[in-house]
Length: 279
Image (cartoon, rainbow, N blue to C red):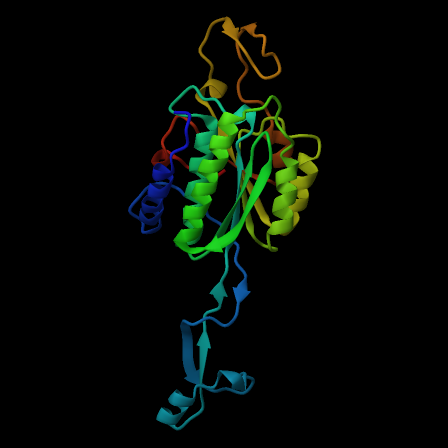
């Protein structure tokens, strides 16, 4: 499969809702970072007024019914903002099992985005291709994920039709996320972590200082355990080809884990319902 289809990504909403209701064994991303916004609408407590209580919380109707001052307290509203970063650079446009690494990245982000909106948050998108890096500002509700999925499909089509020769530096996308995200937001990058660039680690550390930044590493079966034997294969660093045994997944994550970055894994060979996105 080369083209990214919107329908399977839209259908992942049902998978997320079942997981949230306890009907699925799929382990979805957790650790929501939220911030209070206003006093909310759902009643947390209705009780007699006590010294030290805020008089602005007095409930006139309850006070009239009981003849004693009563206060009504509310749960604070929660505003979870999630920005998804899709790596559709040239190094992502291949795969040996089931689909391309880039399409697997879109699946991982769709799972994460649906989880955000189902739980009342806002979601936005940064898509990185060889040609450019584009931002869709965070919005709320299902319409936001429909918009994000449209952005994923459009960016992927552009990446496939204009693959380019080199991977741009991913730190540009991290800097864009740092400018767009409110403090405490959730930033999720889906990438194979190829060609990170010299500034990626510093930018990741700066982003982690003010947001909940984590990575879903997209891994193809060929990278985990290549077939035994010696044969001709090509890599981005040796496009003319080489003879031998390809290496396993590079130890890219080691320096990132040293700075405390949370890194999960998404196996390209497995469908979304069989994934575990936690580190």
